[in-house]
Length: 216
Image 1 (tube, rainbow, N blue to C red):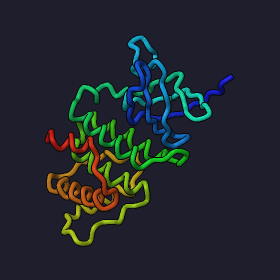
Image 2 (image 1 turned 180 degrees about the vertical axis):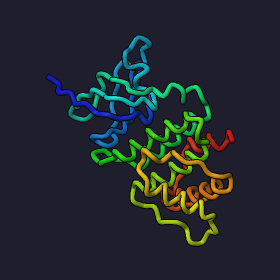
Image 3 (image 1 turned 135 degrees about the vertical axis):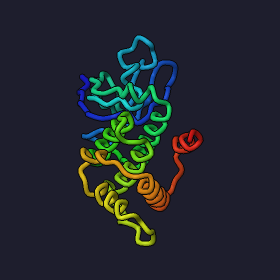
């Protein structure tokens, strides 16, 4: 008899496998990033059809075989349906998911990255904070969560409010991360810092980011 495990997480991406199946990448609270098969999930009548799309957050019922995981059921907490209706927002979300896919590993404690991704997607569907600010905050915080934030750059003339914002982003809890507004000048400086650090520390191109740039 197969023994099931229950993992809380979010789907980062999915790929079609064969005629009816999906292969998903799942960022979980308990086991870090894993990949799993969702058999029959591409059939319209499958209970897994909508529950195995990117951004779905919930509790996944999974059994572990000798070489792979298989999803048997999902208790969905959030489909992020509002985000799916916004094409630009989806592009931002796919970029965030791609960065998290790059940064995370199986059997690591990735709970803070999962929490950051969830709160970032929530911020994308909120009218209180613009998407470019969500992106700059996400980029700086994901670097900080992974212990790689190099500090406030000393070779840039930054507005004091920009310095304060950077200190807040790095030091605040993720739950309180998207609770402030900035001027256009501060936003531009935050974007410059985030872009510089992503290039220096991550140092790779993301396909979703190229799509996003083409739309702006």
